[in-house]
Length: 606
Image (cartoon, rainbow, N blue to C red):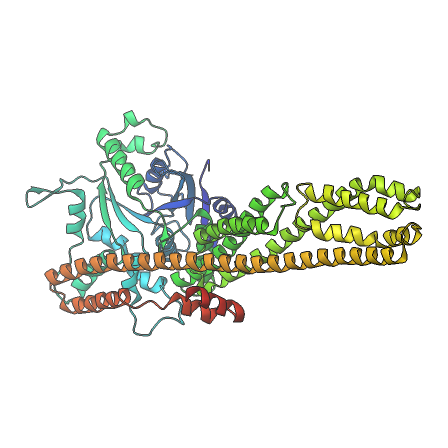
């Protein structure tokens, strides 16, 4: 993208919507995305920092007057400077509390959407981290009213969903602009992170003033899983600031230049890929899909549910996974079509198995939250249909090639039949000798494909009337010899029919074995994927337990015993979840799979 575009439009009539042009851009990005978003009061230099991360002096509009330039959420996708094959998505938001805005009711929705879409959230403020700066972050205290983890149907009346926010929410970075204090506490030098930690300390007490003081701090500590701070000196004089996008780095304060470099390096190295619960790493395409899901919920008067958005994304991505897998199968099979006809059915089945395995690998890589394996079963069915199409294509090419070969080999004999060469005494022996030579030449020719016996049988059957007429007309043969010759011809035809039937039965047996191996491959890959997903959930829970224990320790230090008890309950619930026995995969599958397939899978597992 050469320039940013608006992703979420915030209209003066109070409506918000997703910009279709931005969705079209995101749909082209199949790489994993690192999403860095910035929020803060209007005219605090948010856009400048985003331009720095994009490696540009300009792009996001910079306001040099009291008028805010950004409305809604603007997006800029650039190649990630550090992570190969990743896209860096930068989101610049309109200034919170903009006096020029005719309607500020959507400020909290813009903030909530920014939290939901980002993997790193940057809060930008001026001066110092004081109560005024905290008050600007009051939107964080409204998140429980703007975001739900589960849908209304799934949520318990007594469940505090905010305890799950840390699992889903981005990392938190606080940037303090025009910072003019010394980084010291009680005369001792401190780091920027220690400065933030000190600013987020809770006060003891139960008065309304203490509760109001603690609330935004509790939310920041409780909702976001990591907290980082950067302080920036004033970059230039007031006059130069009005034209900051055009002045050179050499004209900026050297300390500020160094600080922006430090900020950029951290963001490039430490900002994670946008990840959903269960470890699913999002692509640009997926980011666009969840943006639509969240905004549609808001427009309908509902509260965006992360679970609903994930399920909606799963439906879209799993449908795509099926199509991508089918396309992979077709691509691989089409690469071999020029080699058709394949000589034996067994060779064709080996090719199908190889292509099926590659296609299944694509599906497993792209799919997620495929509840009840609905899309995997859809893939099995459609791969079976495509296999049949290619099998029929292989057979048809074989038929055409065999008929052309027989036409070529029998051209001389056909001419001799029409000229009456065999309608003479001794003509039957001459005819059968030439017919046998034709069969030998036909059978030793390579590359005829799977239908060679059937086409030969069809050809010889067509010649039965001619052969019978030549036999009757041959005066050198006794009636008894003619009868024996006829019986011999019928026996040869019956032997060929038997060979064709045996081959068909063998093909059927091989086909069933092929299906069995393909199903087994599905079960093994599914079992592996389910195991990986389960381990990912356990890993998330263990990480969350560690975070909760840290919170509990901080709460104890501050004397908040009641909150510590609630945290203890959450920790115990997570521990129980990690030790729940997993149902046997075989039982799951055999319950879900229909009839014959279910029994078949059970046999494999046994």
